Image 1: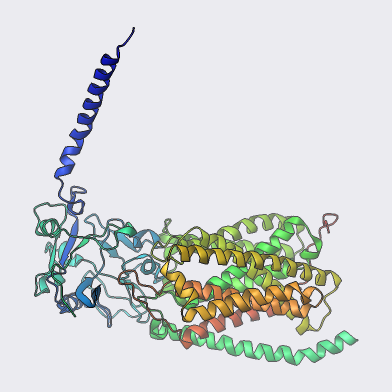
Image 2: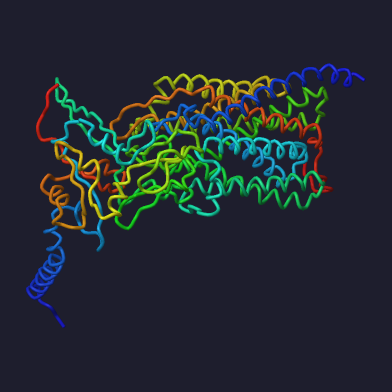
Length: 246
Length: 381
């Protein structure tokens, strides 16, 4: 059967338009998704945090609250408040950036542990089993954020009580637990969030689009640190808006 | 008669060496006890630089042990009679290198009393778990092979040599794999690391084989014999070639890192570590022994021995720079961490090296390490 040029062009045009329409339909709902940061991953809660660097004044209240809440061994705090410097021509811009375990969706520390002492809970919190850790420090090497801490006390030290149960043994790796003992008791907040006088911290369920933390990540366009490391951290930062000249 | 006189003159020297080694061993034991009593506060490692020179020392000793076995078994498979003279000694040296180095690594663990979790809760995705497991299997195989050689069971020794050769390559590459999977450390990450570890293990193994054999015969005051001297000269030639290839490999790794502007590479070439890299690794560890082996060593065992020792120094420095300089840059803010080793760390390493030497000396005294397994009508050269 002979097909004229006109018929061929009409047919090809109709096929092209229908293909484009069919491709657009499944894409349409995705376009409404505000940010991949708060995209719902599963049915249960997925805990995360937003830290507004615009509000953070670097007072270290979070650091103190964390140490007091978790009764951490001497010399160890799960939060480090870094002073960041950005060069802007002839002057420096500074801001404070609190750092703690990012409770990554794809944590680099979990697969490298030779005894499975570090693992990810169903609610997204990455925890450390202090009764199993052998203190090889491989997880500290793997973590690109370098916010794991080694307890240098002797291996047979078991003095300080751990709010998550038991005591802190010496010679193991410690890290932020997102106050798992509070969450397990139904108190969905962390000591650092409560203590922040500038209300720079927001903690909650990232799977809930109406939670305060999800809304803050959306409105303040939260960013994750070191995205190139492919760890998908669950702590997002709101970048400082104003310039502070030094 | 002349040999007996020479041997009797060397006896006080051996006793002096043993006293020094026992003193170093005591220092190592003291450091180990200190670690258990005071914790890792006696180490210079920190949250920014979690691994210290003990890891560098372990990597060096474990690679040398693998290299010794790997080389000896390779020659065993080729059935070259001259090199079979070194087979038993090489295997015992590998055992005497590996056992103290694993003990030293255990001392670097925060909780070494929990190593049973390796069996109870295996982390199959962790290269560290695979390294521990494969090195454990490798040690058992090494001991079985040595027993077979010691008891003169040629066929069994041959079978074990094939299995142990494969295990040595696997164990060495997994040791490199521990570092190569860390995406955050640009000096470590990549497939080149395990390859370099296998290659440098062969270099360290041959260097250790040459230098320890010559030193043993010197201290015992015994003549080596024409065959053994010839084997050592040929090993020297092989080492020359390997050093040349090692030099090319190192240069290309550096060029690739500099092209990619990998920040850690700059610590190696232009920082306080550059002195260690250019002088101790590249100069003393590769170039000088390369030139020594190319020129005057063909005939004199003393020069081959010196070249072997220099290569061992260079190979340790390579691991030292690799482990320590690889951790200094902090990704999050680009800052540079500091690390200065402590006497306890050096004490533990000195004790481990002393234990290695003492185990070897006991073996040399009681296990006739210069005997070979008889391969009637099998040897090709």
